[in-house]
Length: 386
Image (cartoon, rainbow, N blue to C red; front, side, top):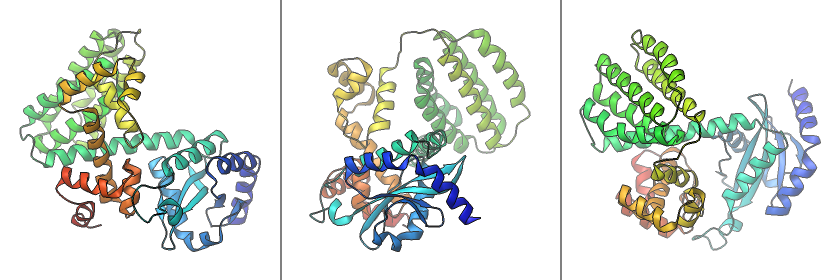
């Protein structure tokens, strides 16, 4: 079976490989090869040192599928690896692998990396998608799921810091932002708001399922009204929501009720996507969506303002008024949050996490992280059992 799978994989890779490998090597000057799930090289030439990282490469393939994008993995022999999963339908049958040495990445041993690892990882995924070697739709879906889980984890962390204890108060606190996202047709911001609301209500409503259901029902009515006011079809929304509301009464499990609410939100957002073109409100929500997507990259206030077709000064005023923070403060906050997540969830070296989170210098990252969290990155990781 393994030999047959390896042969099929070889045929799949054969036609695309010359162009893919040439494009990647020309841009990054790194080794790149294709490997079957059992470790056999089916295209390209793997460095001899890669033979010591067989198990790690298996992890890299599976983690890339799980998160929807390559994840850098550190080997004991001073090499870093990343992979794009080679897939048949949704099954991982191998990977496209690349590697860089620690010496090349950090020639001075510390400080800013001398290589754009994030760019190299993203480019490898894009090439594999372009040549049909991986399931692009599945990876995109997994990236979206990972982002949603991250938002949920951040909401739980914020909640545990002690904000709010009453169910109705929690609902009233989160509802305005969620309605603003609906009016703006901002799917990412709406889902983030819903995650925060679900976390709050699960913790505050507790076993009072009927209370939570009444608040959810109230929320769906408010969302529907906001969408209709913003130009969505009243006929479409009222018809589908009526059938959904009758189904809510039969639900008693928290997970089922949460799934019901997410489906209701998706229906509202789908209706918003089909509405006639209208003026987009909630500039700050759209700005934050761009920042959240690109915060680990080199992104400036001008980049965001250009994407939103507004002036830099206007964007700065809106963000300062709504959030009480400057643009650099917002970027730093997002980067620290990403780094904290990776410190708690992975065993990656701290200097790599600093790089992936958008900090070019490890000492500066440590200083900023401690200022924001009260702990150094190492202390934060140790406190969470990593």
